[in-house]
Length: 206
Image (cartoon, rainbow, N blue to C red; front, side, top):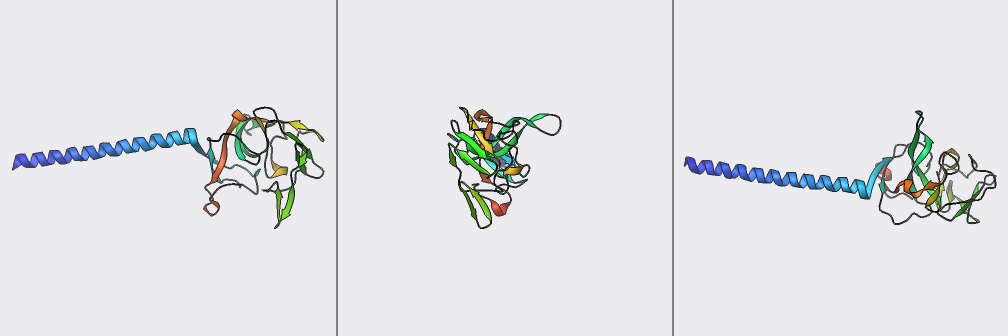
């Protein structure tokens, strides 16, 4: 009887160890998959500031995708602006902006009328339900602020670069400023694909 009890106890212990080993394997597998996902597929980021109002608000949590074959007009992206001040005596930080110009596009802005021209054609402005829509996406105001962009300048977006602007047009340091300028695409951290917070606005981002 004692030997039978010892055998049962040994079998139970062995079974528990096997189950523990299986759970450890599963945990390690899931951990590796999460790390791979965050490294190669997507990552999270938090909106800082009001430069993308009304589309994005300060402190919202977003999901970025690394997996995209190319960028398109109106994509919202996070880019690394290597020359922009961090405010603590250093330069270089991530900023969230919208893609206005792609390689080969010409960009000019009539700052008096607040109209952007891409390849000679004005991006259409529509006033609807108290909102301002530019090229079918909402902006906070028409573009009045030049920053370092010369009046009347026609800029050509270089190869492998993008021209970006914030939706809060007159309170956004973007490609109009020499601190940002044309952004090389290898400085594009990712494309915004999903908003997590606030939960009342969870979903894709236009």
